[in-house]
Amino acid sequence: MTLTRSSPGVSDGSAPRPRPATGRAVAVLVLLALAALIPLLGPSAALHGTGEAAAPGTGGIALLRAVLFAALCVPLGELFVNRLARTVPGAPPALTRSWAPYAAGVGFVAALGLASVVSTGNLVPHSPADLDIGGLYASRDGKLALLEVNAFAAAGLCALSRRPGTQVWPLAAVVVAEALRAHPTTEYSPLLGSGLTLVHLTCASLWVGGLLHSLRTLRGWDAPEAGAALLGLYARVAAVLLAAITATGVWSSLRRMPSGTILGQLTDTAYGRALLAKVILVAAVAALALWARVRLRRAADPLSACSPARAEVVALGVVVALSGLLTALPVPIRW
Image (tube, rainbow, N blue to C red):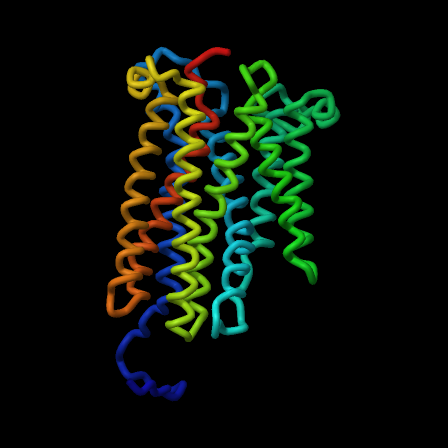
């Protein structure tokens, strides 16, 4: 196909076609808007008929948590896949443009919003006068919220530095803070719960962010064999990550909902309903991952595995939104 450029004063009578990049950007924006509806509208749907009461601003808090989780996935996935790419023989030297600085900025804003909620005693602030920044230093949740804010700021600076790999340390601090925040000291065996959340969140971030950056990297490579090798490396590690996510997720669920009551609570409590939706969606994601792996190994063109992998990324985005919703809903068992 030969492209010709008409002169400024001559029109060929046909409208210019929109660029594919514009279409993709619009599609991404639509998907992000739809994903945002899950934490915003999810609490009322999940709580309907359960008799449970939601905390003030549950939808906004769920959205901020989902954004924070997504901002954590992007840079961790980039670090993970870039490390895999360096082991691929014949891989092109050029790497895809990093999204880590932007993710750190988004994570900083989300963490700042969550810290403002903590500063008002877990109430939604209506004006700057409601904020008690100094009070954050007086509580465990406040200190963890401040740690996340500072960690995202540090991760952004590291991502812009000459050694972007150093952002792994502030990102690890965010993961630790989230694991500790999710399990207060009044809970039974809080350190065990924090350890399970630490492994679960780390593996999930590598899985989601790694797949996203793998697909972005393949688009920038003009080397099909190297691309197939990178996707194969990621698939092997992703299988281990999925096993760890499943094990820690089941264990954590059994700690909150004992086996004798879990079937009833999956349908009768808001937390259980959101968890059930997440489990079903993760099962669908696992099926897409299996489909992609079969294509990668058996198809004439191994890179045809990118099609189910793209659908997997979209489904994982919904899982991230559901994870944000889960953190804002009331826990069914009172410790």
